[in-house]
Length: 99
Image (cartoon, rainbow, N blue to C red; front, side, top):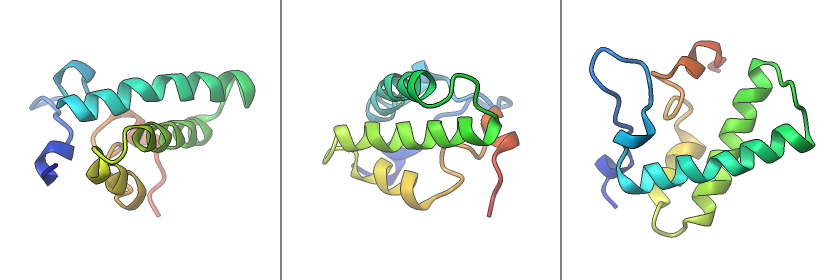
């Protein structure tokens, strides 16, 4: 997979990560992360604050990427090492605390 295949597709003038516009592997990782997020909400905290919600999302995306390995290696590495990868231009990023 090239680096471009791991990039998010964000429409010009928007700050929304639209699932239907993502490349197939990015789409699969994001879509499959929803089950992990639901589990976190049900079993950990049904009413998470914004920082915990972001933690749920990050954990879910990493777990989802692991389940698609090795085909999504670049996505997995970016999720682990690029703190702004998913959250840089999304509404979720507004409450994301950058270190």
